[in-house]
Image (cartoon, rainbow, N blue to C red; front, side):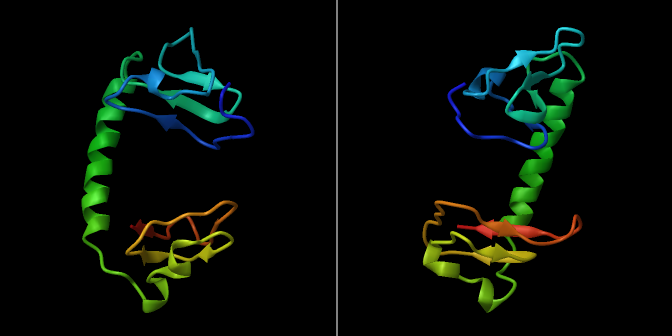
Length: 127
């Protein structure tokens, strides 16, 4: 692997680019179904558009959903003045609550950030 000390908790996927674009994860394709790959760095599964059905169909749906979500998020205004330009873009150690967070500059962090909410909360980060 070329991604030391990293882990992903959940599933990952790419589309329309090939699964080989997910570099550094030492992916091992599931030989029983051919629908996903596994990696010691991913607790879920990895998906690519050339994998066996229904994976390509699901990825096409996911890309469509992503485009709708992006359009919706881009059109939302900052939810509170407290959420505008937090840390002047340096957000290491910050805890974010639900809402629209907006910066007029780049955003960086060199350690952890925290996202505090429930499974139904919406977090939007606009940069």
